[in-house]
Length: 162
Figure 1: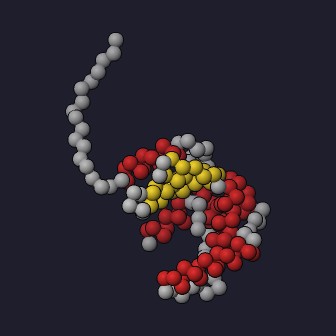
Figure 2: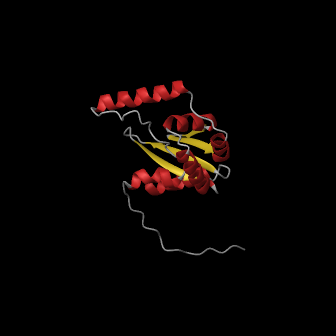
Figure 3: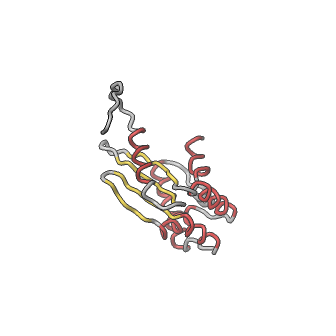
């Protein structure tokens, strides 16, 4: 015999904040990936905008921070970040949600074995930065390359907090 409990009705109020729904979706997506995975999840909006969420499966956040410390100490730059992460990218979609999953152990192995971006990729990135600066009326940075973007929460969320 089953019993049921009556609960007070929940008052639902409409609002424009998609954060709780997106957070629930990201949590559900992350549950489907193995440990030590970094997820870059993009929600495309009907108005043409997009919102990015970062997520890490079990053990992923500390491993991502370790990778970032290692990369910055070498020092690796954004060309290396694009090259190394591109080799391990697992991309999928769910409706208007893009999911880029990066298993972190192979990325760490690449850093430890000295994998770097080829010079032609570095030149292409430099050209892209110069074109973006020109389009926005800014001065491109001197010869200094764009830094390693990150795969751990300490580095990826630092920009958002500044």
